[in-house]
Image (cartoon, rainbow, N blue to C red; front, side, top):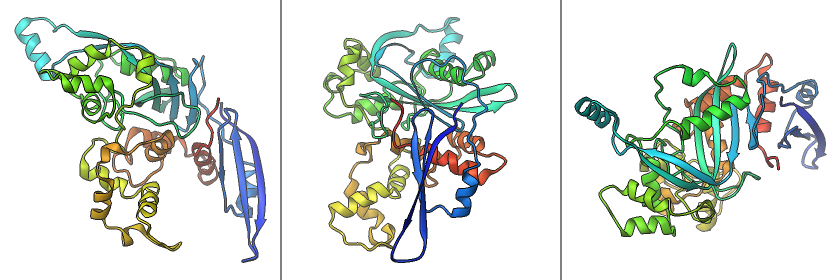
Length: 369
């Protein structure tokens, strides 16, 4: 149960005018902190009587829960060895093999090391409780103890380059609904959707992006220098010789913000990001006033030339969670399950006040220790 446990109001009067600015600091029981300024006095009075209560039961939550947003669960798992069952065929090839051989083809099994895993799972609330509808997973070289932890694209099949899992196909709905209808059940199902459903060759963007993009990485360098007809299998064979301690010290590919690393779609979105706009202005010594609009002084072509390669734009947890849940400019997330789950869960009887509180808690400054 998430609830507001602390708030503080500070009034400030400026000589420039007879108005006051109220700043409300908010902290929930997990230690998440957020603030918002320029709050009207009448709204503040309403805010004091508002509550943020989650009606989703927790269940027996395993270690690793990092944050709860409306409709969203964020958790992590430490570096470990994982089994990857990889079938180097697409679904059509598998069906053709079964028809000709009257049996299912054999999997290639690899026991590979993975660094820290950061899971962002969204859920739909049914009459009997929450059910998972989508999951993202990122790799990291450290636990999620602050918003500036850098995230990497997992070198696992079935992921789009924005680290969204292509939902597995189940023969029986029991595989979706068998988990407990609580936060613990969402965590368990998100983990199983990734690691316990097998992988084929239909979607290998995450693996290929790491092989093609990752820099100064000894495992990737080996695969590039020893090319075979099946680079993914070669990558996993070499990777399986290493330990979790090895991969935690290595750099991997940065995820994209949009579904694919399509140059135009991704670049057009990067062009709208305030952090990159500010970096462009600083690096190019451009003088601007307070009311400037970036698109009026920097053309898309100038920005494209400056950024050079969209694959090398680093992303932090704060960058990703803001893009996934809030940014209206990200075409891949506006109608995604994550965005819809967040927005649907954030609507209450008094939407203005409660949605305000949800947004404040989502813009965390510090994640729990």
